[in-house]
Length: 132
Image (tube, rainbow, N blue to C red; front, side):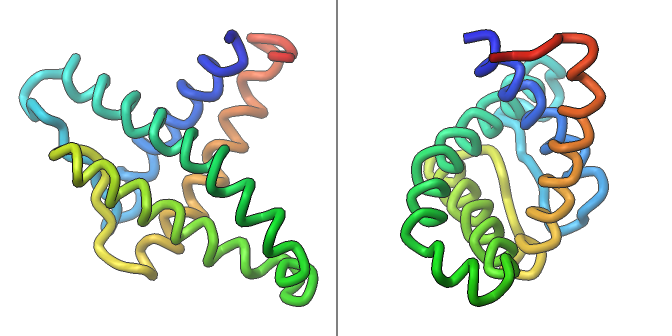
């Protein structure tokens, strides 16, 4: 449970930073003037991203393993962009949340989000200890 909450916070903060860095990736809160609503929106989108990445992302990585080998892992950029676009589509069905302006913004957003998630995880590891 602790690991899940830490990953949720890391994904949410990385997503927030990604929206500040990448112009084509935005998050629309259900109450834009309310700070708590904005934080909850980022947490909800982070939760959706974590579930999509854990379930669908892992399935795709297992099934497409030969393609990963053939492309030396570059297909991961496309897969991560498509997963980010899927999260945007799911959050659009809810009526608020992640918005990605196109596939290439999704690729750039996925790269930045991945790097930021990794960096925040590395920085938090000494503070929270091993989460396993």
